[in-house]
Length: 284
Image (cartoon, rainbow, N blue to C red; front, side):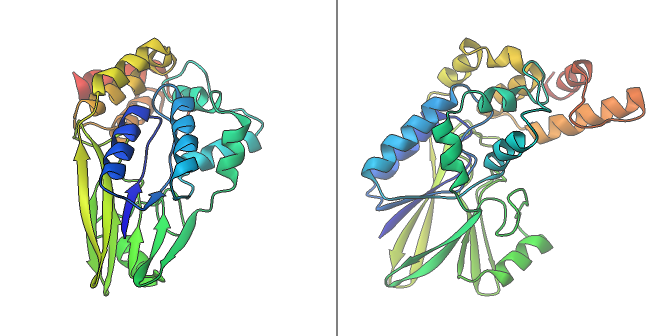
């Protein structure tokens, strides 16, 4: 039994295709997707169409990530709060308004966590952030991670969200994060995980693959997305090429500058000038 585990695609259909092709050639029997299917990058419809086609011929299981929660929350507040031309929310606005009703209905069917059972092999628990919160980060060595393992109903916990591949063992249980298909940290490659069922349980293999990063960056500009969220997309380019500054670091610095200049910073109201200064400081 061979299982492919993929997380955090973020509209990177070229990276997703590379992972699916490799996993299929490697003989994967089952494909587990851990959420955050679109967002950040151009043409989210290409990612969704690729997933729909793949589902027709392969055994796939999906759960919801925090991005899928964002689309539901945006609808619930009357599609307000995001701006079309704004570094802070422009990518979110663009992604949502390029989704179809089929996409939104599909996301609504997805659970936040799930258990997958296999005859003869240990069961797997799937989540995006943690089994209880889609935005919770399960990082090595933290009390949150250790508690999540202690409370996990299965011996293997699969999670995403951090975009950092890792393996953590605690209390006789194992956490595995496959990293990110679409937006890796400090790595100009795409990442996913293979699990092989053996007589001793599951054996993991972390996979990193080359793909056409520059084509993804060209799409950012061809689609107009880089004009809608300029400094967010500048950070995206930096990350795609293997840079060590990520969106979270850029956001923290932009908010610090906003507070320095205005005495207060109410997210998501961050002036573009604050983003510009943060980009100069962190990216040069």
